Image (cartoon, rainbow over all chains, first blue to last red):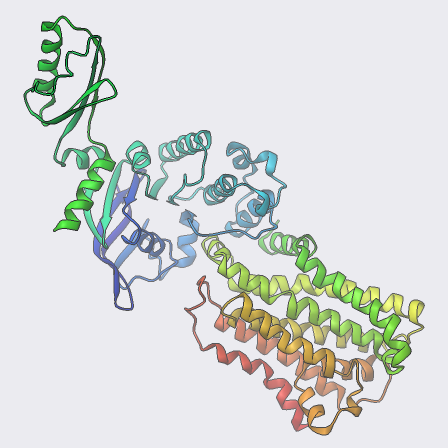
Length: 304
Length: 268
């Protein structure tokens, strides 16, 4: 599949500070790509350089073959952007904003998007009177109104309530199905794990890990959390051990085990419960999340 | 609706919807007109002669010098320019369209003042309406040019107020509205010719009201128009998308070049 976004040896320097130090990655058409990292990792510099808001200090950037620096006019037609720190005039209404931006993109106003994003009742309300979540949904509606080939989302669900967040995820999923490539910068690891096809973890301006969320989590230490609750509490004794368990503790009527090999551990636990004429009430197996892996990578980088 | 029409429509409404702009476009100039009309004419008969041109000039200065730069700086600081850039709104639209819509508000206020001053204060009407319109156009162009330069070079909202007031307050006091140009001390009079208000009042009085000019009124018209065009050229050149206004093509001090056409009038 063709690369919608190509980043090669990209560097961004501010004075003596190296914000991004020669990173390379590609995003295929129709993928959702997550850029993860703590504040100052270089996410925004990368994103805003791809959006044509900043000039790279080195390397090459291409968005569906367009050079963001040399072809800003073409770039605006192929990208949509929901900036984290961008506003709209205080007195503009969603309808006016939609008409204004669609006019500059030379497309018909997409009032249907205001309806889709739950803003139709606020269509004539001034921007300053919208809630934070409504403002973010409006900016998203404006970003997709001209059917961009690549959509950049910077912390898209910050400030959204649960239903609005779910609706946004549904919309993002639909955009992917329709072939839109989505670059997502977020602090929310659960969100990235839920919707991204691939992610890159940026630390101090370098890519610390890149791949599918599953690949990245699988490449970690591989410790799986097993929580077990039984009818008679037969697992409460602190001296019980099971195969492949690194450590364990007791918490709120649950025995918690951290296992490096889940099969033998769970098998042994079930046999132990049966042997002791106890009954299972609850057994949960939680694989390491992307957040766990992110923290592991960040800690490793911090100590190396 | 094309982009210009959509943008013009929004900006025009913003000039009434935004309380600060409503105040600067309408309430302040009309309130001041009524207040000065009822108070100052009794104390200073000269003011009756200049109430129409003088208050029209004040209306233009309030709407442009106080009303245009601050929203420009505020929009840049709030990241609105970044949204505009991403969506293809060019700097020319950001600078010119608010100037045009402010011009419409100014013309409305000028019409109200011109229509009511003879009734309320027995003020003389212009005798040359073409001269009145040319002078009005010139003061609008000049103050618009100065306003966009101030908006583009000011580093933040506090600085923009300082620059705007630096032009507005001397214009009120020395622009030939409160005190006749001929009664100013020689040095002060020369300095006052660097103010767009002085040039505008001179042009209005000579070309519209049929009075004797203090200096060549066509030089005043030429300098005001040149001031406006130089201002827009400088503003386009110095325009910055950056929220912190640190990345631009030239030094902000280049903004002083907007005064060059007014300085050149001292040669005539």
